[in-house]
Length: 385
Image 1 (cartoon, one colour):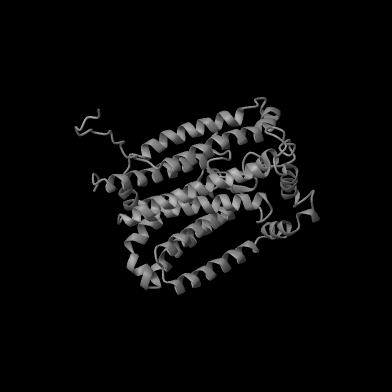
Image 2: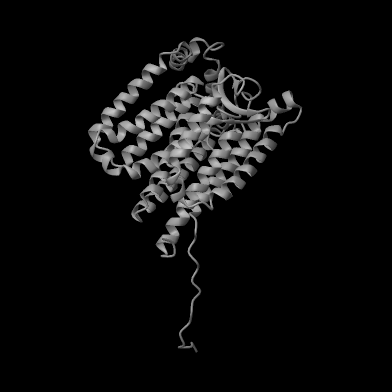
């Protein structure tokens, strides 16, 4: 006989973080470690006599990034909005220091690193982060001016122009494109007047096109991208080797660890051209998995931003939108370069490719998105002001 007494059913506590977002991050990191190790094991063993050298370093970067992210996770989002201007001044100072001989470190013809000995940092990675933080704060403070007046977007464009000049002096055209594209996307989402936005977009696109053809090496990259097979052992070497990797991969790939192109044929196989190794070893299925994981990450990031916007937290919403745009632009360009759809640029796959500066900054970004989501959920429960 059933009891008529009132039963109290246990109610599960609401989740304090977006489970799908965390799932996407963990899968991307784990998959990235696996494929980065596979792509680097031959060159690491041959040059450093330690097959897992890059894996160990990447694990160190991830550990440091996790510790740094745990600190960032404790900082309220409103604090980032307050100090965005100071962060911008700081990163511009660092970008200027990189250009000073003896302070900036050069590699492959570009001066992009600052530091001492093995402890170096790529300032352009930090620049992407700071621009998103600064733009989010600016767009909230100047919301009416952005929507109604031409000066509202001319001011940040002057700042972006200064940043672009410093980045192009390194030179780092890829980072310049990511920074400006992300800032334009944030201004559009903030409600900029459409005719002003279109005029600005045409102006920026024209300026980037002029910059792209202003240097001889960039012209070579553009013409090589259109027909890499014309000079397969010279300027088209890297792209043709990447395309060979795609061709060998087919539907299911040649198998994990069985890539031929990573054996000193494909330069930067564990960094800029990691996706080509994924295509060769895991085929179309592996490529689809990468695209699906990054798409899930970006979609959940925009969902978190949308939730913040509904709660009236416009600064937090723009931060999430900016980070989502940045990740989307960077992984799209990286994949486009690897597959020959875009001219060669030095852009890595976020959270997957080898690189200390990129991993550290990406961990900060992930922590800030988690903080935005956490504050959203607490506000929805009425326990956070």
